[in-house]
Image 1 (spheres, rainbow, N blue to C red):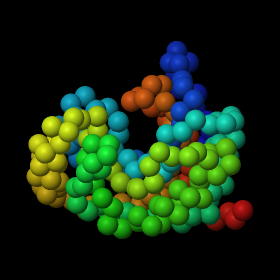
Image 2: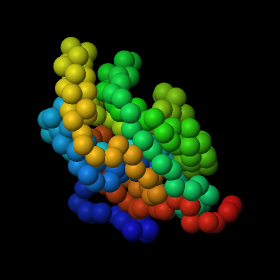
Image 3: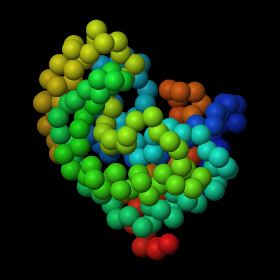
Image 4: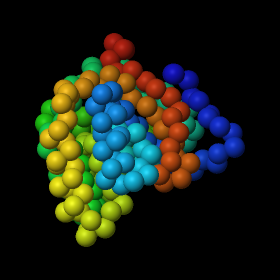
Amino acid sequence: MNEMDPGPASEPRINLFSLVTYLPDPLGSFIDQLRDELVPGCALRAHVTLLPPRPLSGPAEEAGRQIREVLSRFEPIRVRLDQIHIFTISSVVYLELAQGFEELQKLHAALNTGILEFQEPFPYHPHVTLAQQITPEQIPDVFEHARYRWAQYPHEQSFIVDRATFVQAIHLYKWVDLAEYPLGTGQTG
């Protein structure tokens, strides 16, 4: 899907947008299941965030044009997942990237301009979130369960970021896909 999809008209939207790349299966399904084990009811699909949530200063269509133009200048990026870590400030349990980290940082820097520019509360650190909205008391058990289950994953722990999905919030933990854009279409800008 390349055009903006307004989605269900009955669901109100808020001015909060993000750009993500969803993890392909079987990796994506495994992490979706793991996230639900760690935080029951987690409905967010496994992804790497390319642009953390932000309000837009103009129309979503204009942001979509900027995303398409920037992504066209970047070749697909191989990402390999590594060990489980914790962002202690935000109590987030996540998978670190062993490969693709610097390339995703460059992509983020190129995207975080113009209508998409936003002063983010934390430095951009590409990762795969496994558990958030947990109490400090829950962290040790969640962390150990995540490590145990990740060690059982039998398939390739890498994937190619070759597309990104522009999403909009309905509320903070429910998002709708607006458009999908490829990386590396060969255009220069």
